[in-house]
Length: 208
Length: 208
DNA sequence: CATGTGACTGACCAGCCGGTCAAGGTGCGC
DNA sequence: GCGCACCTTGACCGGCTGGTCAGTCACATG
Image (cartoon, rainbow over all chains, first blue to last red):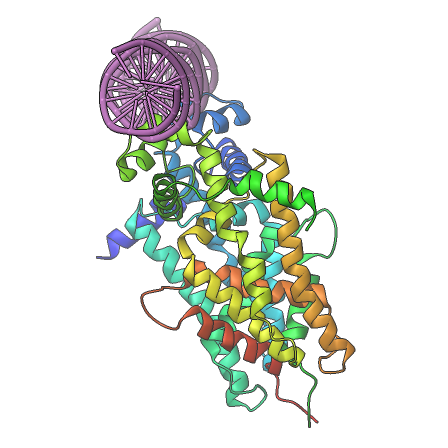
C-alpha cells in the first residue's frame, strides 16, 4: 500500500534532523568509527555530546537506531553522487576511472561515517531498512558492472568477468581505510587513480 | 639460527598446547569469527568448550590473551607457507600468481581464525607480540613487492608502483571474506586466479 | 601413608551495559 | 493566570561483563 511506503520514508528520513540531533549523530559517528559499535556505549555518546543518556532515548529508539541512522546518512547519497560524477559521453575506461574517483572522494569526505558503517555487518535490527541497504549496495555494484560490460561490448575492454572485475575494483576501494593514513601520503583519489592505471593497463607488458 | 629467535619461538609457542587448551582455542576461534571479539564473552567460550569460566583463567591470562594466541597461530605459518609455494625458476607473473594462490589457499583453510584475526586492529595488549605481528606483516608485504620489482627489473612487467600494486593485490585477497560464501560459488583459489588474470592482462585491450 | 602439584570448579565481585521512568524546566498559545 | 507540548534530567533497573578466589579432585612422588 502506498501509504505505508510514504510512512516509511517520512519515518526514516524524517526531514532535516534538529541541530542537536545532528550533533549527537556526528559525535556517534566519530566514536563508532574510532572504537567500533560494541566498544562504544550510550554513555560514551551522551558524555561526548554533552547531554544526558536519557536524552538519547528521547531522540532515538535505541543504540542500533543511532547506528542505523548514521550508516543510512553515510550511504544515502553515495549512489547519486557517484552516478552524477560519471560522464555520459566518454570511453568505458574514463567512466570506470570516474566511478572509482567518485567513490574514493565520497569515502574521504565521509571517512568516519564510512568506516563506522562498513565495519560491521550488523545483523538485522530493522529488516525493512536492512533490505533497502542491501538493495542500494546491489544498485551500486550494478552501476560498476554496467560500465565494465559496456566496455567489453564496445570492444574497448578485454572479455573480463564483469562481476569479478567489479569486486576487485571495490576491494581496493573498500580496503583502503585499513591502511590509509589521511594525514600523510596520497589522497584517496590519487590512490584509486593509481589503481585504475594498474587495472586498465595491466601489470604485464603488452606483447603485440 | 640465533638464540634470540629461538627464545622468541619457545617463549611464545610454548611447546604444543595441551589437547584441552587447543580445543578451547579452536572453540574461541569459531566464536570470534562468528560474532566478533566484543560480542563473544568468556562465558560463551567456556560454555561452548564445556569447561568452567575459571578454567579459562587458569590456562589464559585474559580474554585478549586468548584472542592474541588465536591470531598468532593463524598467521604463524602464513609467511613460510606462501614463501614455500613460490617456485624459484619461474617468471614474475607465475610467482605473483603463486603468491596469490597460496595466500588464498591459506585463507580458505584457516578461514575462521583469519576472519577473527583480521577483523580487529586490536589496540596493544602485548607490545612485544604486537611488534612481531607487524614485522611479520611487513615481511609478507615485502615478499609480494619483491616479486613485482623483479618483474619490472627484468622487463616482464610494466613500470607500475610496487607498493601500490601490492596493496591492490592484497586488497582483493583481504576483502574476500566480506562477500565470499564458502558454501557456493568459486573457491578462493579460483577467485584470485581470476584476479591475477585481470591484473596481469589488464582490462583495456592491448593496443600494440 | 603424607605431601605436593596442576587441572578444574561454583560462588562471588565491582562495574558497566542498554534501557526506563517520574519529574523538572522552559516557552508558547490561550 | 492556566494548560500543554516538548526538551532535558538524575536516579534507577535487571542483566551481563571480565576477572577473582577458596577450595576440590586426581594423581604422582616420597
